[in-house]
Image 1 (tube, rainbow, N blue to C red):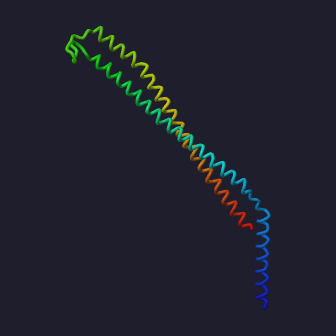
Image 2 (image 1 turned 60 degrees about the vertical axis):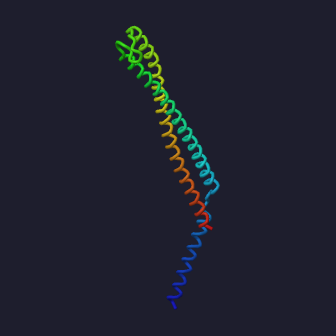
Image 3 (image 1 turned 90 degrees about the vertical axis):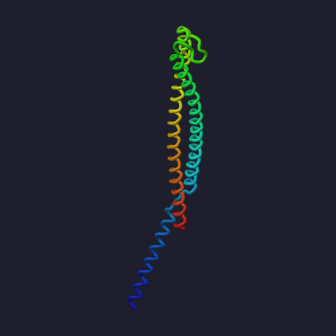
Length: 168
């Protein structure tokens, strides 16, 4: 029948079109899986590198905070000595002897001389902690970007391999 022959002709044309499309895709699908794999591997190495940088920054922050705690304790101790000795008038609260104003001023002056460099050291440590924390934020941001690059490279590799397989 005419209907059957037309249907058969259309089906053959569709099959021929699909065959040609598949041949074209196979011929033009120049997926360089090696290049994609190299890109993915490099991105993974970058992630590892950024993880190490982040870990180093974390350790530095921890160490700096420990140093800051020690410097702050020293400053607080010196301030307490200054305050305590400035408040002493008349008789010593510990031994009951008369406190010489000249002696008290000398002792307070000695503590204040020690306090000034301790405060400067604390300020330097605070600045170092802030800088290291900024480096940690940057390292975390770089790590996040590197992780995104790994995902993108892996996706491209998977799609490239899939396209190559589909073309065959």
